[in-house]
Image (cartoon, rainbow, N blue to C red; front, side, top):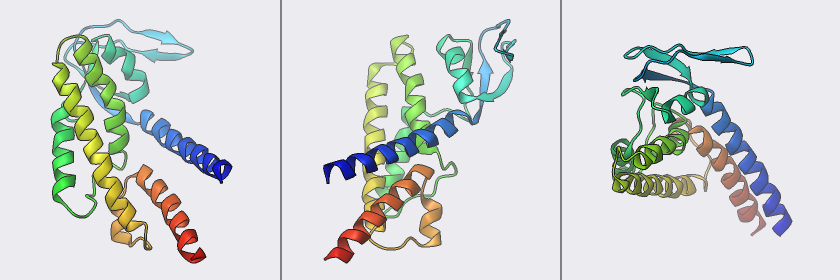
Amino acid sequence: MKLLLEVIGERFTGSLSRLNFAFKNEIIITECIKDFEGFSLLGESFGPFEKGKKYRLKLFSVIPFIEKDILKVASTEKCDNIDVQRYAIGERDDLKLIKRNDNSFLNKIKEFKRFMENEVIKKNKPKIDLDRYNSYTSNIIDSRLLKLLKLSMAELSLEDERRLTNSEKLLYTYLYNLIKIWRDFF
């Protein structure tokens, strides 16, 4: 039994990692805050960047530029403690899963935490903002998980399926199948 759970856990973790990898390859809008000449690496060019201009780049490639204060996430793309708080309040106040415009919003919260940590390290934001970010993130995860557990006891309607993020669809499938096997057994 322990081996079976380990195999399921490894498969699930691998699937979640692939979803997160796909998210890191999505394009985000950034804004240049400091001129940068740019460079080429393995045939790929990064920059030049001109202060005040906006750029559409893959998330994984902008991370070092954001951490070095060359680029910042555009205000339309940001995800800070205030945004996460808004998500958490919405989840708390609605008994059903809330349909988000972005099926990767949980991945966004996970990955953008790095930017919040960077802001705290640089003393641009107080540590309490990072603590709130983490707390609201936990609230969102727990709230959506409880709703997902309730859903996984039955087949998913098309309306409910549209409300799930990509990672939640994956978790639902695992939970639904495990619960079905357990119920059928008894």
